[in-house]
Length: 119
Length: 237
Image (cartoon, rainbow over all chains, first blue to last red; front, side, top):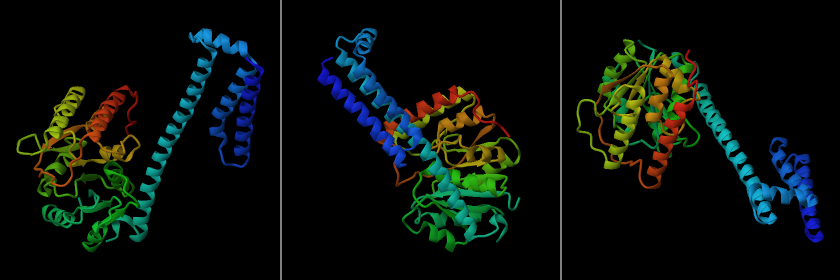
């Protein structure tokens, strides 16, 4: 890999890592969501430094060019991150549903104390 | 029986039909409580129920039929009701059939009594797509549970405490209960019985069309398939 490419990849990887760290530090991003992003940054750095590993990976998955492998890995990470979001959104939807139902029931009971026995 | 039975009516913008439904219920059964779940209506649904002196739970925004219905079951569970009748607010269901449904669960014949518009008569008019959907999923459900189900989409049901527990639990799908729920009920060990009832065609809403229909088909097949894959569907009380 040309030195320029290597330097560029390193800068990208390290910037991503620092950015994520900063977001977690400022509590804009929860720790539980940060690990996949850190993994992405780590992947970029490793592949930038260790070109042979990238070539080896390309052989392993049958890709002709190492760049293809990079794109595939990039897509894979994005896929995982969006999937993680979908799962979290589903969980949040369930929780909002339950909360809303409970709030509505409690509100109705507050306005009509004693539940079913008060007529 | 007083204080044991609650009629749950999920309602979304039903100001035109609701008061007649409530009046008809009062004329058909006595000693039951009526609970309307106002599913974030923009019209006078809530006001009408209050004016008629019945209880109403108002959801802060529209959550959909299943979630509204489940709210009622959670209320029933919390307030120790032993039997629930669920029916629609649009006047589709004939309140005179309530005792018929209720008797099935009161006698212990079944945990869930489902009002079927097809069991005896065939005079219910629905669009071809809807009819086909009901037929297909009715047959699938019948095959799986080994019992004939003619009207899997029926929202006219009576349930005992087992049924109430199930509908109030997280196993109940929050969007639109259908044949998948019948299969879940069966897998949970609850007894189901269909009862012939009168249903009037619903003029306003056409539920399935185009993309919605595709999503409905996908959702039903997926839901039924996954229901069968789950090992422990519902821990019975």
